[in-house]
Each structure stands twice: as structure tokens, then as C-alpha cells.
Length: 406
Image 1 (cartoon, rainbow, N blue to C red):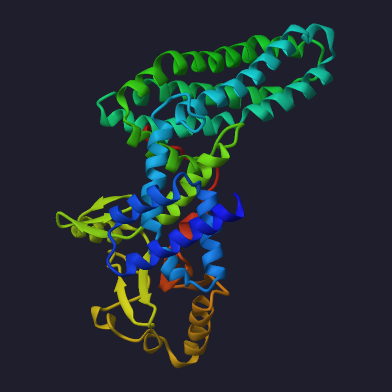
Image 2: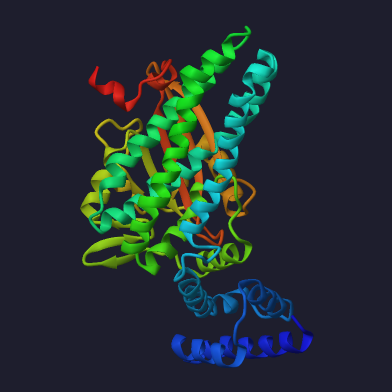
């Protein structure tokens, strides 16, 4: 960015920010931004914002501009994701991962082809390296299951959730079986048996999944999903992660800027509480919190008790009389100093949690205090969670959901 262009953009953005405080609407601000600043990347906006902060503009004033460039970034993403061939389009990213997966399966096929020319130890060493690389295919599958499938279901397309997810699990099982069997490779005949019993089928199923994705799943998804859906999928994708690839830098910056600009604040909608991750009625929320097998107590930023859950088997006695009470008054005198010390550390940001455990009535009780902060790190209060972990400490082995029927 040239110095002259930078100064012009900085001047216009400062005027827009000040204008927002004086009644300029978002649409008017966006129109002026587009007209006078023109195309500007999220990185360039960040540079201008930092320069304004360096010049003395407060971060609170800068935040008032967030909604303007959120609109700009949203528009940029809509334009960018309107085309499948866009580097940042989720389908293109899935396909890029497939190309990397194919490199691994091709290497496994090459290993199969030369398995009779190398000894068991060399075969096992190369196999270990390739199977270790293949493990990240899990991220590829999870991103489909948790992001792409739910959006397809909204359009009444249930097949992937019911069929392809099952095929994912078959690949997962084949992979785990191959890892376990690999450890037994020692003798000259072991590689051939391993290939016949495990490797051929694993490679076949992984390649087969790529074919199903690119010839059935992705074309159907592109037909059914809207640009806004792809934007939402892209926004959430980094929570799952990518397999073998990195998100294109510019797209990544756009998403980061959008998330930063978006206000993750609850609101009321049709007598329900609208949260960034869902919509729930007050009654559902109350019973949901009371169903948790833990005691929850929330103390606000002024050290006032504001809420506690009322589950059937509370560990510590709580009466509704404590709501509105100063939390220091809820503790015996000998522990007040320690409580205040913890709260001070939460408020000044030196700590985010404090944990304790004790034996009470023959039960092991685990207690954690969590500092509750907003997206900007502002302290909102403290959450106390107490749980009877006696039974948890005795758990051994595994019990999976599929074991429930036994």
C-alpha cells in the first residue's frame, strides 16, 4: 500500500468513524467507504485501524466501525464464494484436501507394488510413516459431518448423514484395524498378509470416498446450498480444522475480521433467547441447566450472586435468599480472604480458573471457579462449578454409545 493511498484511506475511515458517532447510518457509511476508499483487504483495514489507534483514537471508537467493515467483508465473501473455483470456497478446499489424500493412497499403492522386494522391517517403517500421515483424514470427514451435512439436511437432503457418515465410520474402523495389525509385522510373510487383510481394502475405501464426494456429494451441495450457507460453513470450518492444507490467507483474514466484527451477543426473539449458537426458550434453558449433574453458581462483576442451578441432588445447600447477596457474605469468615484473592486475580486477568477438591460425606467433590469474560476479555463475573466425581474416578476401559444395547 502506497503512503499516499494509506493516508487517504485513514482520513476517510476516521471521518466515517466520527460520523457514526454523530448519526451516520451503517448503509451511508458503507456507501461512502465503497465510493471513497474502494477495494481494501482486511489486512489493509487492520493497518489503518492500528494507525488510528497509534494516533490516539480509542479502541471503543474503532469498534463502532466494525459493523461497517463487517458488511464490506460479508459482501467480499459473497462475491468470492459465488464461484466454486474460488480458492476459499469450501468445496474447493475439500477437493484440495482430496488431492493430498490421493498422494498418500498413491504412495501406499507404490508400497504394495514393491512389498515383495523389501524386507518386513523396511515395509513396516514406510507403512508407519504413510498411515501416520493419513490420520488427518479424520478432520476432512468431521468437517463434512458437522458442517456440510447439517446444511444439506436443511434442504431435505438426508442421504449423506444417513449413508456417507456410515461409510466414514467404516474407513475409521479399517484405519484402526490397520494400525493395530501393523504392529505385528515382523516376519517375511507378514507384509503380504497385511496387504491382503487390511491395506488393499483401506486404500480402496479411501479412494472410493473421494469418488463419491466429487461425483455425487459436492455437485449436489453446490446445487442445493446458497452462497450464504457456504459463508457460514467457511466461518465455522476453522473450529474443526483442515486436513493437509491451510486456508487461503486472504480468505482467512476475511473470516477473522468478520468474526471480530460480529457481535456475539444474546438477544430476545419470539420470547426465546437467541444465542450465537442457537435459539432456546427460558423454560428449556432453566431445565437444561438443572439437568446438569453439577452445582452451578454465577457471581457478577460486582461480586453479587445472580444465579444458581437447582438440580435434584445438589452438593452444597443453596437457597433463593442468596440471590442478590454479596458473595463474600456467603462464605465463612476464615475463607473470605481466599475468595477475595481469587476474585481479584480474575478481575486483573492474572488467572482464569481456580480448582479444588475435597472429601465430603465419603464423596470426592471437585470444585472449579471460572472467570467469565466477553469476547473482548472484559470480566463479567465468576462461575462456580461443583461436581461429585466419585464414580468418575472409578471408571476403567471404555463404554461407547453402541455398547448401550448390550
